[in-house]
Length: 322
Image (cartoon, rainbow, N blue to C red; front, side, top):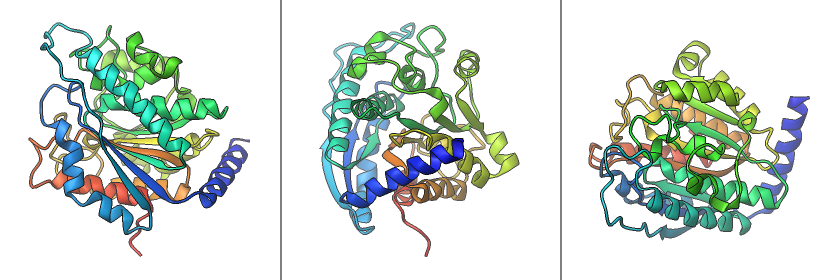
């Protein structure tokens, strides 16, 4: 039954794709307040320096660069004991991003969101969910990350909001974040898949079990292979009648291939595993928005991580070897 639903949804989504102009709208979100160190706010610029727009256009897309959102500057510093640091600034940026993403989708474009830290996913996914809600459709999600990003103010060890966004879109966390776009939760965990986890906090484990979201850990990728794991991820996310968003934290990658992240964890996705994941997403045809986050230019080497980020974006948009 599930396979029939997936096939029907993919048929509708692919038919809709064929009627639309192939358009990609780029939005940068130079926000670093959700992380613990500076440098990640320059991620959008680093991706653009790697000739992002021109290389997407070479795939046959109409590309519009809508520039960067203006991130409100904080007048105070966060305290170490704060459980939700820079809440005001992050909620404001995410509310604006939600409107921007929904508007792009309404115009028939594919939002390409450049981070910034992963707290911006609260905004991008809220916009996607709001667009689906208006159409009485269900949004899905594929989330690539070394971490679960499912802490709450009660479980967070750091107070950094970039460790909370997946919990927020499931309706858990500060109301200033969960209520962006005017409703909560944004997503059904049964239509969401997390890929690449290898560093999960105790409180996050409890929420994962409670919500029943599918986590494909690095051990499972080692045992089953990336191809089988992505087939399962796509099968689950494709059950969403509105298609699915893809958000990619570069710390999902092995640090040897992507040194430019402030939250490195050894043993991540290899260069080819990551490309295979993006290539299979392109083949499946249900992606409705794409996001790449957590490129920290202060830690990168010769823009290596940003260059790989652009390559992965291209693969997700249909670039193939032949």
